Amino acid sequence: MTYEAINKLKADLLDGYNPDTVPVKNSSTIVHINIAFGLFAIPKLDPVIGLIQAVFSPICLWTDEIMTWDPANYSNIQNVNFKEEDIWHPSLLLATPLKFGVTGGYGQRIQVNANGNAEWLPGEVWESSCRFNMKFWPFDKQTCVIEFIHADFKADKVQLHHLMFDEANYHHNSEWTLEGLSAMTLTRLNFSVIRYSFKLKRESTFYVLTLILPITFLGISSVMVFLLPAESGERVGFSITLMLTMTTFLSIVSDVIPKTATPPSLMAVFVFLLVMFSILSLILAILNLMLYHRSDDIKIHKNY
Image (cartoon, rainbow, N blue to C red; front, side):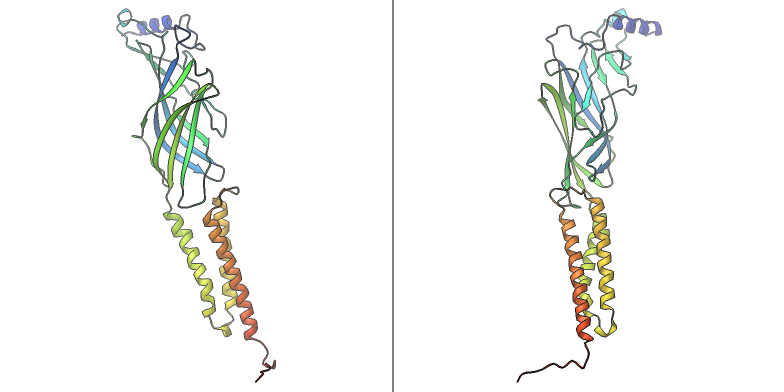
């Protein structure tokens, strides 16, 4: 293998080659894109704006019938690399985007062997929309879907196929546990689509220790306020403090849960009820204090 031989091979292969044309010798032939899903990380899930951020590389494999050669004529060269813009490659459009974008464009090379088998790894960070069900937050499980569509050519020219999952290099998210991955291919409006589903479970320990347990004990304390001696005058002050603390926790929950969450979060309902209970305790404490300090000159008539 020599520098001159590689340059000659690439020049011969690119002579008359059109990267905008499907690389088949017969126009009725379908190009099958086999995709191996290499997942590296899920660094961010944001239920408030409905976002999943994933770092992965859809390893694309296909056959380019035009990019073939006899290695014996080119110093036994078996493989050669091309720039993305030099040869045809799949144009995968994210069908569930928060912002528009297509794969590639970052200088990834496409490797082609003598039989025309091409391999392309357009790895990048993807941001996709995701609909969250927050009913059981923070003990919730979510399923987010990322879809890719080959928009340049319809399914009678190019079809997408799932090959395998590769999670060997996956870095675990501290808040979410990846419970499963699945893939399926379908046709939509005569275009080939591949759909990846992420099944995720939230790690709830942090929320239990910093939110659920404290607010539960505060709710119990709202009842204990009536054990304070009435003459101390601390019942009202203690009830006000509990009510304000409950309100703070309610604001924390509202910051985490989307304003349009459907169905509503049971945790938000629970905190709201505790706030209402603390307000009721405050009202009862005030009434109790008023009755305790009633003037002694008010006579209570008894009927015998």
